[in-house]
Figure 1 (cartoon, rainbow, N blue to C red):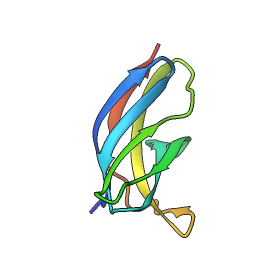
Figure 2: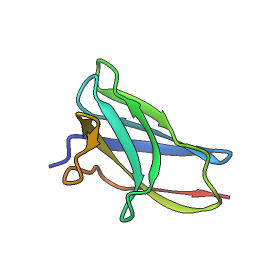
Figure 3: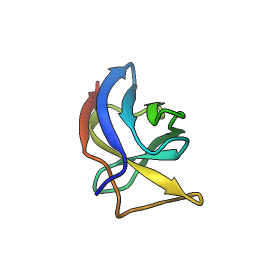
Figure 4: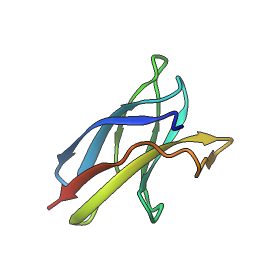
Length: 88
């Protein structure tokens, strides 16, 4: 079962801002579901909440997932729920 969760996503310009939860003080990786393409990364706060802004993205449809990083590596067996958004 995933230890991270995307609660909401909003688009500002050519970037998406993801809000969610995960283990406290943990590095979080944001990827395109299916391909694993890097979309961004950040860290949860002490309360386990995170707000991560993606890298600038090209126009298109995206399905983001987040995962916990352990020793600098992503656990590919522990992705969150998917969050879809569009960059126009």
